[in-house]
Length: 240
Image (tube, rainbow, N blue to C red; front, top):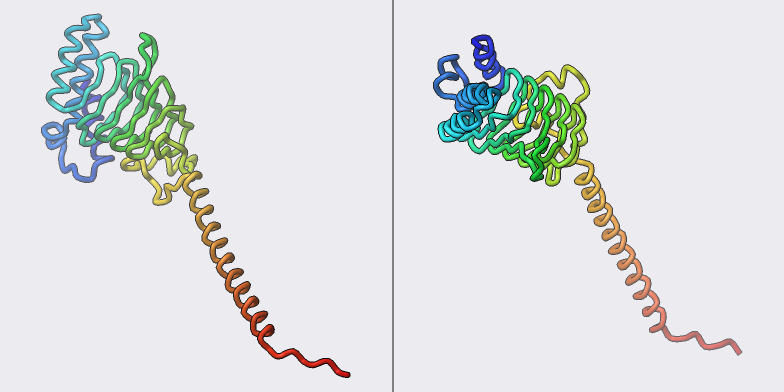
């Protein structure tokens, strides 16, 4: 237990440059409080003391603004930065070294009693306001950009952006890149997706065609003007 707590404190230093001491983490970080309360609630949930577990979980929600169902499964070194508004459903599964920001929802879209929440594999970063919905899988090392809405499986190492979320052009398969922490799920300055690039290319083509049409209209007008000038000239009398 104490090893887990120490890991929870140390992982904050790797992902938040604002932290200054372990005491600050213990006293001032709601994400740290939330994971400790979750583990306590989860203990009672596994003992089938469900009401006690839910009561402890609800107390943690009131204290931290982070709602984690005691039936969820969460791995080691889990970190919620800022935290307010985070919701993690009952059948959600989260691997090791996962980071969530405020406003994230790992939610269900079905009334089914079975698996209805996402599975988040190791080293995933989910940006602020992102919604990951349904019994889908987010592969290891993936990044979910802020405010993205993810409804389908995500391949390992892919960055998802947009509503509904689409893969960005950059894919992070290099282990050195995947090991680096990416705040808010945006490790690259180039986050334009394929659809956006296609739209930009179409707009550029429209502008080029407009320019060509203007040029042709000018040439046509100039040609018509020359013909009128020729019509105004006096006809040459025929040679007799």
